[in-house]
Length: 171
Image (cartoon, rainbow, N blue to C red; front, side, top):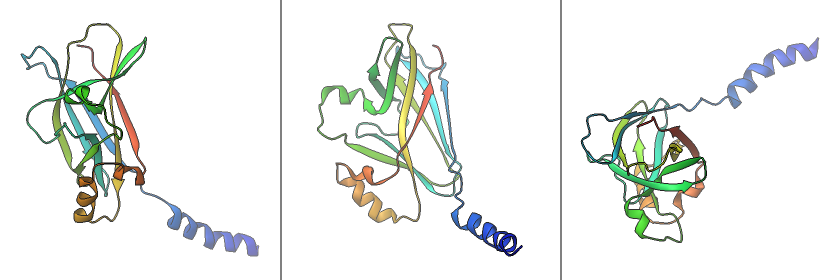
């Protein structure tokens, strides 16, 4: 009986202490039918439904707050699919880096980021997807974080990076 009482007291404390809030990311990708461009255009929405700031990693040549569509090149390809990634833009195709020079775009808690991406016209019927890495920042100093990001290199390795991949709607 003593053990049951002890368990009744200890279990709620343990659950409260070790419980983590679920980090929530909501991403949508839709064709931009209004585009008259020869490239395939998509509108992407990334919503941070967490109480922590979210950082999306991307190429130095991508600006997710720009009104202009951001061009993504094929990052990897196999017999069945082509994968696009925020770490590989149109401009990245002309460079070879020793270390992937990521920078990040912050999305504050409960905020949404909308932007356009552009892909070259598809020359095959392979499945296509777009992906990016991201992480959540808990109790961070904006000034220190931005200072780290300015040092091109492996600053982002110290964070627990997650990956999101979406299938592209047929064009």
